[in-house]
Every structure is written in C-alpha cells, then in structure tokens.
Length: 181
Image (cartoon, rainbow, N blue to C red):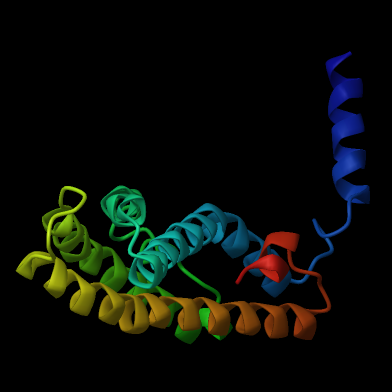
C-alpha cells in the first residue's frame, strides 16, 4: 500500500508543471515570491492604510482618523524590521528588492514618530488647536508624501521588475503580484 502511495505521489510530481523539468530560474522566482508574499502584501496594505488615514485627517480633520494613525502605525511596526532583508531575491530582482527593503525600513521607523505626533495632537472636541496639533498637521503630511510615498514607488518598481522577469522566463506570476499597488 505504501509503495503504491509513493508511486502515485512520484507520478503526480512528475506530471505537475514546473517541477522537475522547470528551469532553475523559474524555480528560484517561485520560491522567492512564495517567501516574500506575506511580507510584501502586509506591508503594502498597512502602509497604505497609514497614508490614507493621514490624508483623510488632513483633509477632513476628523478625530477618528487621527486616532487611527497610531493604531495603523503599530501594525506596520509589528512587521519585523528585517523582514525583507532576510529574504534573498533572484539576482535580476536584487535592485528592486533592495529599494523595497530600504524604503520599508524608513517607513517602519518613521511610523514611531508619526504615532507620537498623532497621539500628542488628539484633543477634546471644541478645544482650540494646540501646538502639538499644528506640528502634526505639518509633520504627518510630510511623512505621508515623502517616506510612505517612497515605499509605494518602491513596491510599484518591484512589481514591474517581477512582471518583466516572469515574462522573460515565460511564466505567469501569482495573481497577488499582478494586483499589487
């Protein structure tokens, strides 16, 4: 019975596309995308959430948006600082992966100050604008427009590099890569 199960498994693996007959670069790309999948998607979504909250608070001035900034920043900071650095990309994706790694580190680090500015600016309804709120109105949009936007551009460049590399190998990348920002 075991021999039959092993034979069946071996036949299934031999028949499945992209295993034994796949080009080593294709396997390397697939392994890389599998290892970077959660980190890339989680960081992109969480950083975009911080950026949207800052933009909404700046435009609308609604305290719930301001209060959401520290919470969203804590979710960004929950992703380990070296999450991208521990993943080794294929050589063709090294540059774009490096951009994502560096810009994520800056965004993650900047979230600590952004959360501090937001918490300091929270005030009771009807109270006049404090110096802390005025500072938050200066610093938070600057953070969103520079550091967080830089991460968005790095993710976009990484996505294009992955799509081009996959096309050169004749493989289709996972749907999440195509749908990424």
